[in-house]
Image (cartoon, rainbow, N blue to C red; front, side, top):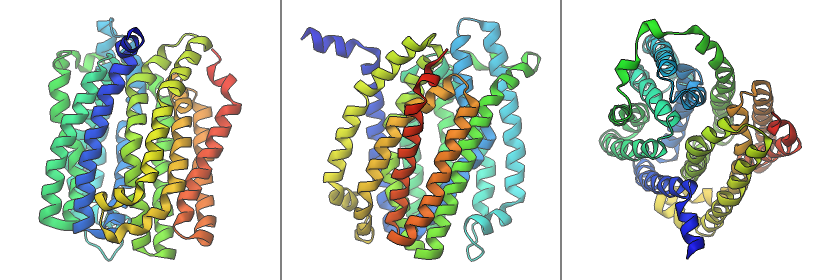
Length: 425
């Protein structure tokens, strides 16, 4: 009993448990959303939704300049320094909100051009980009609020924001898809993230009086310079990544058809659900601790905690998921999506390798190892793109998930051989 009590009393257990509840809620929401999309939109429409998601991911990364992890780091380091916090909050907010306005103007006036690139000239969804232009500043403000709360170490509140925000987003998404089919699905992708602003605004004001920390006189350009290395890292993965996925999906559409691309989007959505547990836990719990680790010994303890306490249960989840893949497809989608059953094996292998490697990537973020991060990202994305081109020719749509597994195998091997340099202080 004492052993069990010691485990329950650990901060990691408490955060993991709450995060687990959050992920379960997201998965439940994902089940409903995916089912609605499958019924009202189908594989072809799902491929269009996937293209829009990749584009929005790129826009969001550009709009926030990759400041999230850097903001978490500097807020954590200046938690007890009010003057320092004022400089960080004012500088980050003024910079990102101003940039969001500029990007929004570009999106609004280039909507027709963007429609032809993302959806093709045969579709007329330019209004979706105008909607994105309106919602983007709200998304960016939410991003800043969450980064500050995370930096202050209020992990539970970050998770509550996610829980309540996703419930609200579910209601909006189902209503829009129900009434407007593909158009509604596209608008839901655009509008839903901005809804989180209203939740995060409530929680940040329970921690600090935000607007008292906001003033042009506290703007400090040196903070922007310090955050610039995070920008380079974020732009590498956050811009190049979605571009590579867009290129792969368009290659699949050209060679195999829109329906096959929809199957890949479907298995990717399933992957997103269970990978939420890993990525959110790394962001809200492990990243701040890696940032504050003073030497290789402390870093090693954090790594061991991740490999010992997080990866084993995650592996069990993947094994169970593979065993129940037919049932999962029935629950999530429709009979039209049955072919994705053949994609599970390589997707799950790739995701486990990804989960194993991510802790190394967060170490690079925590200690601003910019060159190393950019090189490894380029290697990983290049491997994914070129191997998918080759494997799709031989194995069809299954070649994409095989390329996914192969790219993260290479990614993991690079980190294993570089471990000593990663933990060196």
